[in-house]
Length: 606
Image 1 (cartoon, rainbow, N blue to C red):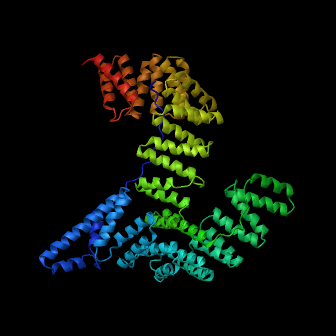
Image 2: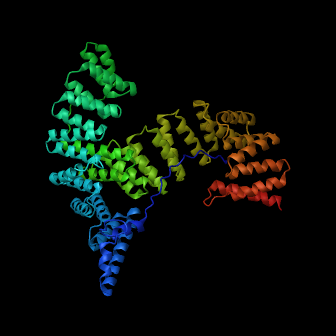
Image 3: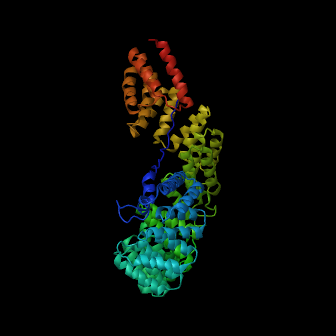
């Protein structure tokens, strides 16, 4: 059977383009103060003996080679080799080169070599004291080493220059002050920042936390409300404002906040539970019990205080997400690397960092990060699904399937993962495994449309055509408007030359749902051909070919129609065009079609 099953659309990540020579040239320019000015290196060379010039030229060449080789290794995910080359370049450079040292610091962070990362970040600052990213990097590394005074100094330097405003510096400095038991100073910093930034919502959120810590609940309430005004009623802000309301015994305001949250998210468990408890406290016992049943299994833990370290991690994570929203990927990467250095078990940081790497064609590192997410983490199944997608992109369908198996081990009722696994196993030609996966799913969900459809296709690919047709009939029973199932059954019937009248009705039903689908039109044309309505078939097949110009089977069908009509020259041209469509990597079905078409051409002769 030549049934052409649906293909899932694939996502293609944009390639990372790095101009290595330009970067290398900027490194070799030393500490030149302005564009076009001779570097210190060039000035020294002009006044040196020839032998020294050759020596320095050779040294310069070695630096250039080391840097280029390091960058090449870096963008190909070979971080161990990149580290060696950058270390060599760093040793040879007389004056600090911030790009080299900042990259080295990042590579050391990946290796968990925190002291070495700090040293290189310091040298990057020495090479370019005006670059905020280097100071933020150094401060973050210092914090992970609990060297708070050094971190504080860097934040103070950044805060002393309000143009450009380094937003992260204010937030991270306030967080540091909180970690070192100086909440009043943190409040001063955040109030200053709120004015300078025209009300950054994260600043108000953090300000609310410090007011809450100082038991200044009205101020905390005001800060949280301003944060909500600037953004939306997120779960974090809902929890924070609710906590302050409850501490002030503001039941009316708490109830209103719950209703507002439920207006946006009708199944929000925490809002439902709080409403239930408030109803009970007000004497509406039956209403309260009903609400609590709806939130069954949810643990109310609003009053739990976070320690300084976890609050700092959370803030750094929020900053990373904000940088991602701004598409400032380098800054987001820096914050996530620092977060992982301070908290290796932070699954969300690993997941989002993997997303950045995957988006910049650093697939190997993305997969490594996803692989390190612990099975107990809430994000584990999401990480494994993401890893499966990346392995598919890399062409390793077996590893993709292995990751999806891990998802199903934890979530046997995850229908999307099961369907994705079945598709992956089909593509890997592991049809027996695909069949078992689908049969296991159908035991739990016997009427699931997606699983039934995939099961039918697998049976068809295993040459069990009668079972495939029977299963696809079940899909139509479950959903009479599943156009792909209608097409499948219609095509199956015409291939069997069985019940052609029903086949025509089914494919016309499919076309009523998707009238411009070239494959559906091909099926209709093929039905009409077998019913002897050749002029109608020709018209339909011509339309099908115009919509699906690169399919050999469609053109084979069109050629057969033309041949039956006696249009031999036109049929020969269509058959030849079908052969020209053969891909560089043909499937077994493509090869079978090629052989049939070639045989037809041979029969027609010149």
